[in-house]
Image (tube, rainbow, N blue to C red; front, top):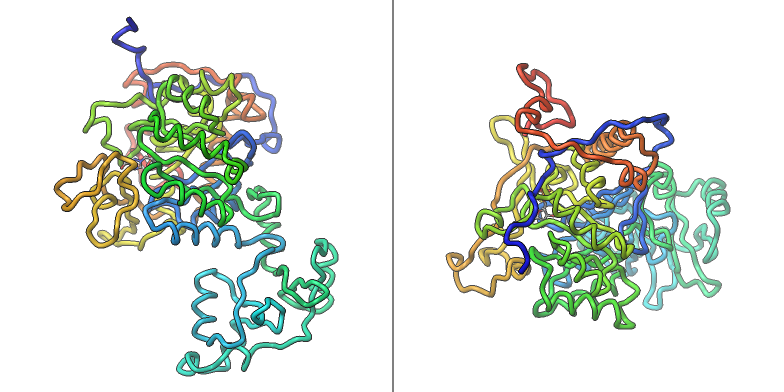
Amino acid sequence: TPEKFATLGLTYDDVLLLPGESDLAPDEIDTTTRLTREISIKVPLLSAAMDTVTESRMAIAMARQGGIGVLHRNLSIDDQAYQVDLVKRTQTGIISNPVTIGPDATLEDLDRICGEYRVSGLPVVDGSNKLIGIITNRDLRFTPVAEWGSTKVDEVMTPMPLVTGPTGIDRDAATALLRAHKRERLPLIDPDGTLTGLITVKDFVKGEQFPNASYDADGRLLVGAAIGYFGDAWERATRLIEAGVDVLVADTAHGHVHLLLDMVKRLKTDPATKHVQVIGGNVATKAGAQAFVDAGADAIKVGVGPGSICTTRVVTGVGVPQVTAVYEASLAARPAGVPVIADGGMKHSGEIAKALVAGADSVMLGSLLAGCEESPGELVFVNGKQFKSYRGMGSLGAMSSRGKKSYSKDRYFQAEVTSDDQIVPEGIEGQVAYRGPLGAVAHQLIGGLNQSMFYVGARTIGELQEKGRFVRITSASLKESHPHGVQMTVEAPNYSGI
Ligand code: RVP
């Protein structure tokens, strides 16, 4: 019989990385990593599939920084597919499928669509998608708001002929045209006048501002989306694929479950779905990881209970300390060439390198990103300080049917209930300090990782994984690691004290 007690479980605070011989210059360090079997990203960070962390705004921001966002699934299939669509249409060199408006729409419609997609102007097309004009926010300015509901787009748009480019134009030619005509937008058309794309100056410039951005083969931002495995899960998966999702993420608290493994197998064999990358999870053992390797998953997500808002280990007594869990999973995943994602339990940047050395290829973050400008939810003021709400997907609030329908209960094996007292939560609801835009937060996280790599003497993530060695520490050492004996007077941008 197998032994009753597994090895001692270790987590981030139980270990430190040993410094190693290093002859690196800062610009030599490369954090590019494998997200899945087929997708690489330049920054090994994912934002969590949680309704207080990742909707389209966060996903866009994450991809621009070089990571990827995983859209949560606590919303209808339509809404989630729409979020995928928002990301896929955003900030690319050439928008191959631009949002458009018809001539009979009102300025009110225009204003709403521009707000939803965060764009400042739209090509105007007729019923057969022929370009007939262009309309921007500027055109709105000369019409009083009171008249927006009754004014039609074709009354104020700039009609054809416009400066346009041919479908398939290259970057240099497009830049030259925009420059020569001092235009901000260049619609692309076929010889018969059908709109096929749009280039905006803003996107061209942004491309330069975000040198690490994660793009698909068509130059669109990468995006992931969470799926379950009960009920309409298959429909959700196929609709997300239609909307252009790059990575489907099996989003469950316990992934070592036959129904889910069967779903991954089906996704990876069905001709309609097998081109999309599928991340399986969550697991915390070698056997769990092996099951996903066997099912054909393109990456495996690890973490049972480490999350900051998670009470699974307390409520159920089940879990594996995260460093051990990642290490164990990697024992099955690494030989099969399947990347590992360490999900949950990160409090500071230092844990990213620890996770990678333990065997992960990237990490998923919840609490560290929930305080960003781009996460869903309003800012709240408490005693003059700014916070944003952050809750577990297994919390009462997220699983409750009060107010909005909960779509993600099956993450925690909870059936439909008629009242909230039938729910057994595995997470809590809370708030985290407001941290400003993701750009600044990511800068600290990536900067911290770069420093880790310098200390270890690793030029690449592969070298970090190979060279990195741990020293196990005591609780006295942990105290020594944190600032001690000093009252902090200034808040550091990368240190929370907890
Ligand atoms: P953290 O980064 O420590 O805040 O953890 C985020 C992770 O916690 C998520 O990616 C998810 O795996 C897990 N989670 C989300 N909800 C809950 C819960 O309610 N227990 N746990």
